[in-house]
Image (tube, rainbow, N blue to C red; front, side, top):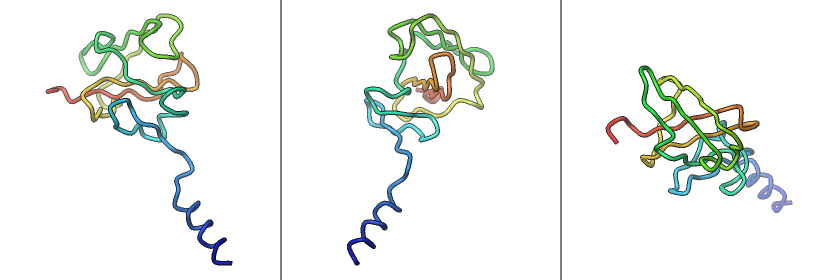
Length: 111
């Protein structure tokens, strides 16, 4: 009987949605990511793909900039929608497809 109680407790303490980590080790928020580091929708994008514009960012992606991108995309993010990157890199989460940006992470402006 105690075995079932322990198993139930373990499952209760494990979050039902698990966010994966960037290649540098910071964990994406569970709302933003689906999948894992190899198949997930969040990943680092090249700095050359991001341009700081008044009030936020312009993100221009081509195939190869993100594993889900198959054609050119331009996304605009306001500063207040942008999440803080903990590794000094830019990251983008696309979900449920390449046309839908879910979360954008940017380093502090002083980085």
